[in-house]
Image 1 (cartoon, rainbow, N blue to C red):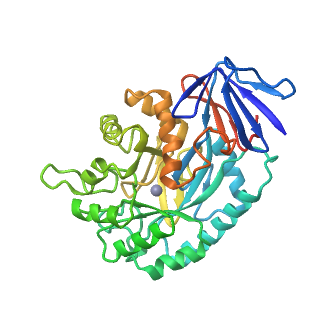
Image 2: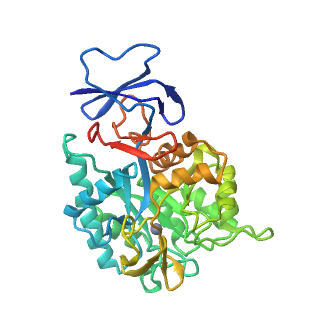
Image 3: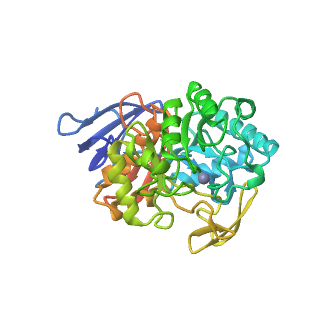
Length: 388
Ligand SMILES: [Zn+2]
């Protein structure tokens, strides 16, 4: 089945197309052009979103849950509920992200997530729009004790190929991203092995000095996790991991733009350092996202949520941020345009994570897109051409 979509403008996201026509066939984009060049094919149903913007669906590569569901505990049959919630915030794909937990519990969670990922990949495109789990992000257990944040100290493990292999097997190869502290003995070997398996290795939860962070990049790391948070701070005479993350153009890096994890001035500095092609927005959202204040689970961790702030024993414990709000915050905290901010939530994370058919509106890509008001509010979200 063929459908045509139009609106005031479209972000590819690198380019802006005025009066666009987006043609979708069997869940994939077949053609994109401006209606000033030619008109819609006469026999194709046309969906007109008026003065809205068509943008690629947001891709959240660091997300622990939402709508009351914690991904360390959720059953595969519950994930569609989370998927529907996420589409109301413009997200069409995400990496289910773990937290450090006892290894048996982690492996059980990885098996459930692998089931959910395989089920979502098989779903026919005629189903209602739901954001899909596209892979697994292992946040832990190879984290620094000193920069662990709320990850339980007794669940942190020294990096070895054996432990990594066990997690890989439990996840049936669906691990797409690994956050690891490069300074822990054994980390560089695991980084190299994970990179060989096309995992996006991300340095974070780390107290590394600059040379160690650089060695991680040479071993295969290509990204950094929630820059500034759970990292050795930048010091002008002891630059540390942050100088490598901000200064090395081979690394992309992500940030949590909820106005709580980072001061807006630091967001601005980060965007200037990483630039339009390497800055990535994440939510680090937990089960409490879209829910009232109260007490929630994040894997084995109990989190108190009050006025949008998530804490556990006084430390920040994820967020209740949504991707659409992160995008709007970028336009408020910096000079970046809505299109720039959309790129940091779509193409940049998809590139960092090795997802070529996502985060972009181009012929051959999945017809996953979101319809935004000119100020960045989500009006509709379409997954594989469905959901309008
Ligand atoms: Zn996280």
